[in-house]
Amino acid sequence: MLDAKAIPLVVLQVTPALDAGGSERTTLDVARAIVAAGGTALIATAGGRLVGEAERAGARVIIGPYDSKNPLTVWRNTARLSAIIRTEGVAIVHARSRAPAWSALWASRRAGIPFVTTYHGIYKAGNPLKRAYNAVMARGDVVIANSQYTAAHVLAEHKIDPSKLVTIPRGVDIEAFTPSHVTADRIAKLRAHWNLPADTPVILLPGRLTRLKGHTTFLDALAQLPHRRFLAVLAGGGEDRDRYVDELKQQAERLGLAANVRIPGHVSDMPAAYMLADVAVSPSTVPESFGRTPVEAQAMGRPVVATALGGQLETVEDPATGFLVPAFDAGALASAIERALALDKSARDAMALRGRTRVLERYTVDAMCSATLDVYRKLLARHG
Image (cartoon, rainbow, N blue to C red; front, side, top):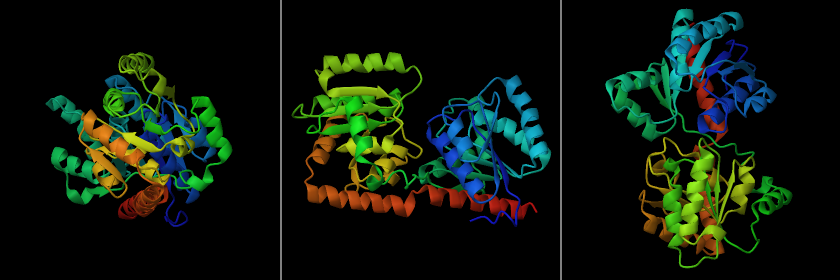
């Protein structure tokens, strides 16, 4: 862990919003670790539902238009960040998204302090202009990739010096995602809220309500299961949620699944949600740069069915901790779900043990934060 007495640690993380996504949660986790190490954690953001949690963790949240892609606003944000760096004595700037990363890059260069980026996703680059826009995420003094898949993409796409690239996988909060830490009251409350009978198998698809998460393939797969004695929960929020939910409900109706499907929206108690599930599914139709939900499910001892794409090829070990299937293949997805539901108690317990052990060895918040603080320490030592 970083010795905050030896090196004054004031880190400014810059992110568009503090909502419930993976990069936002990672921002919060790292801020908490900075504070625990005796440092000062600053977060420049446009706001979001995690602002209160960040402040309770000891971070100082500075609200501004850091979610804007308007070139003039991005330029003005450089001055805003420069002022923060100057007045707060910031030692490191850490950017987590492209538009604010440009402002953060220019501000850190003006101040002569280290600039770190985390490559949280695989950005589309259909033309040279978009590729140039994305390239800011590869211009950090250190570039952090959240998986081996992402690291390979960064090297292929941006041709950076491999010595600048560090792979630090996303981490799960083991304190929260431990089965024995979830009380029966929490489980019962969520069961009642979702109207789930106690004797019916539950198939959980956690994730943002967007087409990229494979909801339509999931519903097609459910229609191919040999019986209808199950309830499927599509848990998550997202932009344009109402329109997409209407489309999913219509699809479920056409497939005769209306009585089997729940779409409750954003879920604040995900550990309890996994405890209700007999199997967790992540049928993403594009490669996940990391894929948080399969890791959370394994931490909670749940069998996982995921598409064999991107980071999920690293986080799910088939058949030890779950099952991998081709994307868009409803038949293969249905077979894997049926296989997971058919596991007897001995097989489920063995899979649960292997999955949780794998998470504890590779994907904890403590390991992620320790590695990130080590990046900061080495950069500060290098810059004197």
